[in-house]
Length: 224
Ligand SMILES: *Cc1c(COP(=O)(O)O)cnc(C)c1O
Image (cartoon, rainbow, N blue to C red; front, side):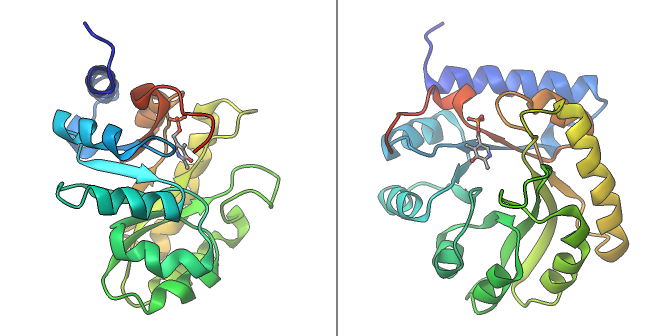
């Protein structure tokens, strides 16, 4: 079989289905967001023609340009990267889902947005508070403020497994935090965990959204 983004996507989808079945889960409850950062709009179009419906980006300028070039396609755009407050409102205009809410200044920036945006709260699983994500001790406070912000629909939690930890152990910590979140927001049950290297472990842990880049797109170009 030819090795193209479309065939890699199909191969990944098969692995996702197999991992879901092995975990006793329905593959249809798992959304694959194909992260296309640094790749051209033409690659996103190719993936859309192959059946991809959800794409993820991590930089506003690059994302908005691709979204404009591909406005004829029925794609759902997800923002997965660190977000600057002064870009948040613009991102909400073309992204249906923002996975990287990690501070109250973003909530304030999004409060005036014109349409409802689905959001994940990103949890920082490292000890380095300079990384993206809210520290676990501050999660519930941020969740309360999210619930009080008009036009935001809290889906659940997002996290990136740290390189220095077994992904399964990291995802277990996210699941425990998710249970804490449910006491405050019973409907916020979604989990955006799992990337190219660890999506099978994420599915076993209960992922509902996978953010998969290089396993599908191939290696990212060095310069965006
Ligand atoms: C780039 C990126 C991904 C995808 O990473 P791969 O390892 O290429 O699958 C997922 N989540 C976030 C936040 C990213 O920035």
